[in-house]
Image (cartoon, rainbow over all chains, first blue to last red; front, top):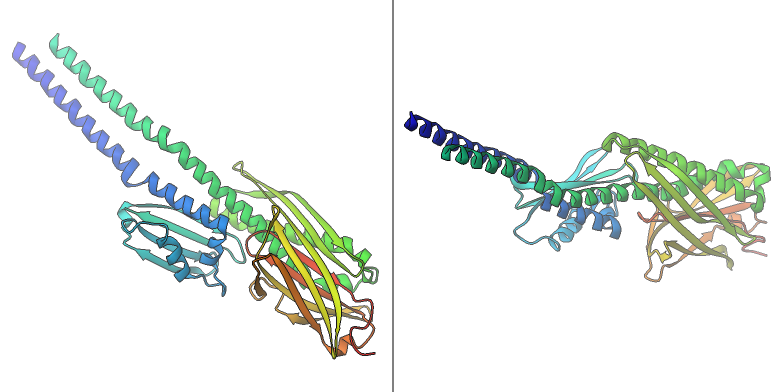
Length: 131
Length: 263
């Protein structure tokens, strides 16, 4: 009788521990794999900086109205270290994707932000960063 | 007894781990993300106001025919209120149009709360002197723009051509703007009808002329063709100048008092 009770207690303890690990792993996945706050903050800060300095207009519209991918590349790579990948997509609100540039980008380990500019027909700048 | 304690400890570890995992990331990182999200939203609305201010200036300059075809507006003093009302109207329309598109994308509707426009001038010309606009959104974002323009217009005789030299300084929050775009046209009023003759660029931000100057002072120099400058002026010179995404803009309407060429 005593042996059975011990066995039951041990089994319950094992179940509780395993359950804790499973739930913990699930929560970590939700918080840190599918959404990386640090990368999102960085992407948002870069976009705010671009909006404040006017770089956003050069990136999204350029002089001719079709954006400036070379300038965007230089602006991004002067800010991001080589181990951080990125994908920058400029979308016209009426004509679809204007251009897209990327470097070492891994969508599975990424997060990002978007900025909408309403000059002319409007542009959406989507910047995603990955580790 | 020993077994119950063990189960109790295991349950406690389970509950504490759950609480920490659910609560900690949100408490430590959540507010920072909220700040960034709010900043992005505020910038977007602010830039919507800026773009509306710039595009409204070009729209007004593009539709001066209507204003100049009215007899009472031929006097620059009377034109002041028409220019102000037209600019307010175009700003409102442009902003509402953009706010509609923005609402579709972000699910947040913004409205224009305040719009103050001042007109300045000096006898032979009038211009939009300052723009102050505030927008509020459903998500609590409040954004504003505050920009001003300083304009001096000078008429010159340049032999066969007449000359118009406008010194334009645009400022946003007391900061001079270095990069502007501009366009200019001549509106000839004959028999109560105004006809447009484009001088430089087109009254459209995409087809205007880009002008960068480190000092922030921009000289816009125009030539009036002989067929106009040789007769007593019944024409008006219109200049639209705007920043690129800074929210500063002006429309200048000038009328020479005498012939700008010939005898």
